[in-house]
Amino acid sequence: MLTALHLLLLLLVLHRRFARPLLAVLIVATAFATYYMQRFGVFLNPSMLRNVFRTEVAEAGELFSWGMVPHLVLFAALPLALLWRVQVTQRSLVRASVVRAAALAGAFVVLIAAVLLVFQDFSALMRNQKDLRYLITPANYLYSSARVLAADTRQAGKPRAVVGADARLAASWAARTRPALVVIVVGETARAANWGLSGYAR
Image 1 (cartoon, rainbow, N blue to C red):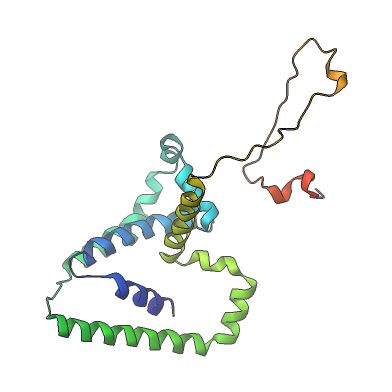
Image 2 (image 1 turned 30 degrees about the vertical axis):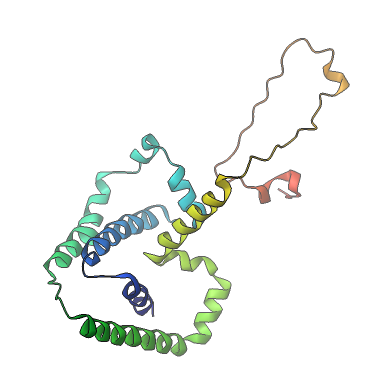
């Protein structure tokens, strides 16, 4: 099912002039993605991709190690070697269109047949474990990247919201002569849903 789905999507955009470079980029990116997914047990959802795009060079440098080399050799270097050995044949426009249409139809039939064979289990799984879709490469990081970039584009022209403009010092602060020291410790996983101010019990 997943192979047919990816083939269906790739057939919509691939052209012989840039098929090999595009597939090479996807192979390398997917090799990195699967390494970090396995190494750190993460989902490549929009939230994680937002972290990736916000990471600075110094912080990102700590994530590269010699331990990733065997994984990259197996999942990037070998597939790239096979990819560049494939000969791209040039066909006439009519013949190329017929072949592509047949491949699209075949991929679509296989996709539908595969879904129907396991539909009951598959629908229950996707309904109860929605995060599983973010384990499917390369669709996970492509989809998540598009979501993050689209959100950033929408926010680009908007002014920042002013928070706490009505805050004022209480009367007890008038007599203070020394400045107050406030220490805020924020965990990496802190989010709005997990603040006591929002009713979070813990």
